Length: 308
Ligand SMILES: [Fe+2]
Image 1 (cartoon, rainbow, N blue to C red):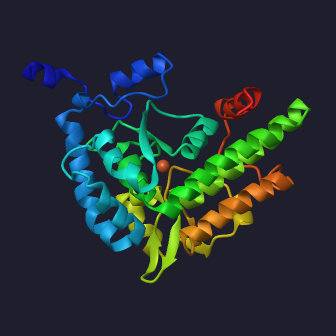
Image 2 (spheres, rainbow, N blue to C red; image 1 turned 180 degrees about the vertical axis):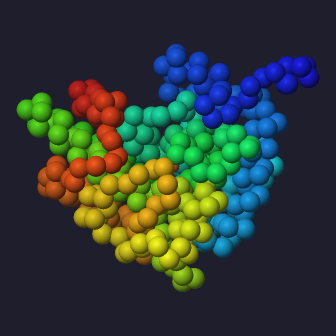
């Protein structure tokens, strides 16, 4: 038994045989084999949680702080998704859904529409705690899921999912293949940018000053304070036309962040995003990051072909 524990490789980012096998089998949605977590995996969670706690109290918005309390996360052990969902589901209907890794764009947004959040189950190495560009369970569960306990925020995510369906409907009406791919690429880029500058890296102006609600910030020990305090960061009230045309890079602290007033405000912007999409305003956004890959495009085009 002990020797089994010593040799099992755990569920460490980019080093988990369970995940590699699921990918080889083409399984996007998986279970969370909780017994596979190694002591080192739990140690990584423990260290991440302990060092973030005072930063959350200082920089996170009130909805997040209320949310993380209501999920009753264990500071010492990686959470079981079923436990998280037991607390989360009654609040907004959202659930964390285990995935093997990258989910093509349409499928990701479609999950949100169904109030399911694709959740990575691996965790970074305990000796490399700092921000990594790919998500892990700390980013997804401690960074994203507490926000999903908020009704207005949850509705905003669902609205993003509906936008993806609108995109499918719109582009399936374009006959010319080249034009269809061009428009779809721009629409997906615009959605990805808007998601990035809000759900991942958003700031909110509140009664107690500027606070963080973006999950990329909420799961980053270094960047959460940098985002709020560093003099060189450009922070502006959000403008939809700016965010959808603004390229971003994922491998360093963000030099430009956008501020919303409330989640109602954010919801109205996602509404507007859909209106602009229908009007054709997203068909030619500025080139640049993020790259929209083949799998992303295919996921939308296949949804269109399947009549979803
Ligand atoms: Fe994220």
